[in-house]
Image (cartoon, rainbow over all chains, first blue to last red):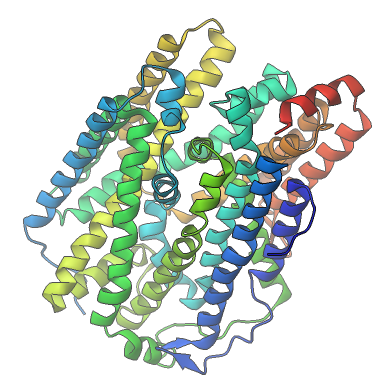
Length: 72
Length: 496
């Protein structure tokens, strides 16, 4: 866990910007091959990245805000 | 491939049992109520746990639009281009966090039950409060409209034709009304929790049962090369990503305008309860929409060349096909049909409940009868629930619309209330003057864009553009017109 002293508002702005930047994965080449269980690899990677963002960004920020608000 | 399938009499029996279970939950919640008060009826006295609220909120968000519309939308998009949906769904969780980080501690500290309670105290203006609530109300009302239409259609489809459009809509309406009138928010949330579990279980059944029965990896692999219309290679154009980013923002902030989301968020007794939900909700919000994309691809592979109207039923065709192939497909198909009913009823219940709550507690009390006591408020809200239920049934008789178009319309309007609402939660110098200018200009941009037919600029949604301009204006006007005494008072109100 990274300990950064920041207000909930600023943390949420960073969260929104990072998510908007990373959640639509322009950085993955979207080609047919290779396939994983019949599905293109980029599809699997896209869903995995979105899922990881869900935990790495949202859960982490939620923990940080909870600490800031409830424990000062 | 067979599009049609004759389901057994067990399907309508299951549907009826399901409806009876919902009614029983209403009765159970009525027995568990903690006194007769506005706080208990509208927030269950904040006694519900995070698992109930997490699954319940998912059931509220995932509507009939999701459970029937998305597979059809994926089909029409060529399958994989619709893979942006998981990103949209996860963005909803950010919306919950943006709202909950402030709304939960503030509702605990200052006893807010409705968004109007907060807006009235924060801005000190009844006119502004009502204006912002009307923008949010439109957002919620469109979903109410959508669910009302879905109730009849889905009832007819999921009962295997045993129940007519009118009869199934009537049964669902009665069940939802009994649930809400008896159980209040406790009943609505508990029913939504059960429906959320049914929906998730049904979709897991699709992933691990129905999709393999329909050919699984083999069919999916051949779909990308068979010329069935599946698009596995996406055009890497900047406008495409700009469009996706604008939709992520549209949904992330737009979801905050839903009254039912406010309902479920402030029902958390603490931020810890919301944070605990994020342990399991990201996987649900990412995986379930992905399954609909896969269903869209399977639909293209197995039922190529469907018309737009037929593609709306592609998921039903797939279930029918799975049911005709094996007994396991039949059982999982029935489970998915129950999941579709759950998706529709859970959203309908939450929407009608939240609308009647806001109409009674905000519009009735703040505009008509400021001296109304708690009993009066509860009675008015119950009368409104019945009225909305009847109105919903009348809507059932109207022509069907393509569901997806409504999603954009409702969020664009609701967004214009979200900018001042959210900013005022975090920044003490945000004031009513800034809120008026920002939200009115944002609303005019949305109306203007629809009248002119220019709904996108470089594929960027004009509703989101209006929201960003709205946000900027709220900040600039509020900062330029700030008054020290107002800032001090606002700082006290939003201090957590």
